[in-house]
Length: 346
Image (cartoon, rainbow, N blue to C red; front, side):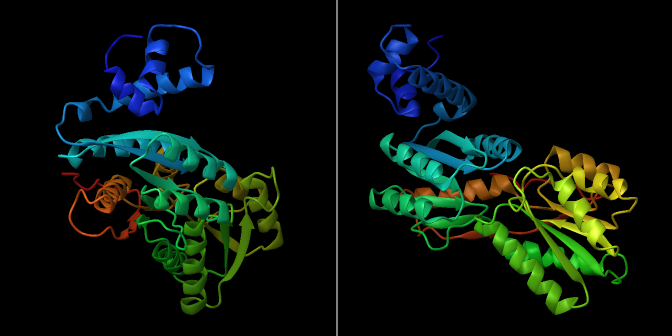
């Protein structure tokens, strides 16, 4: 491994001793394979965050703990590493702990590990569970602030929330579903994921409440990712279509993959989806939007959310003026004709 970075920087990034890093760099025995992997990942993170190392200012290590599909964690990593250079004069270095469908106990374990490795703050996307809430409280007691991202833990000791206003997003979805096609819609499918994410619950609450209030004649069929373990989204949609001949619209309120299965399920049943609305403009949804298989994407500025999360962490540590506070980003309604332009980071 080339000596690109100081042993001290690698040790801080990896959360291990300088002696351990020296052993790994020089290929000496006596280091566990998992620790060797941590050192290599630390070097890779430092390489991506190289511009930060040239800045002056105090260095803070932020742990980013996110439980989400890979396409979302990739977007988080890329958006955050684009954001880091504009956070001067402070220097933030990020360590990433990503998972998909981890148990609450596993997420809590990652939070304990962040504390053990000397974290200065945590950006967290995790299910709302007692284990995770307790781990956040323990971090706060040790002086490690936590900011929740995209989905909140409202009953926890987190210092702030940064992300989309999920209730408003669900209400916006209901408005579009009810109005799209002249207001004559009779039946809609609401696709949900795991019920442990507060953000998704807020979306569904906003959707169902607005639909009942403004479009009381529209029936709602709910399907859940976790109601039939192993069942694909397309299978759940086909079953709903067979049960309701008037079903012609779908709102997918969760972030898991498989959106392409929805128009295929309609086609397999000899039906046409009159309106399909999803969240987050990642590459799959961009493609479906271009082909007309998705009509609307509800999007938000993830880089802006991450910048606000980092600011809140620095405020919680007294490095920036003011007290940390939650900030909800606006809901962007994206069609094929108005691709979003990221907000400036400077």
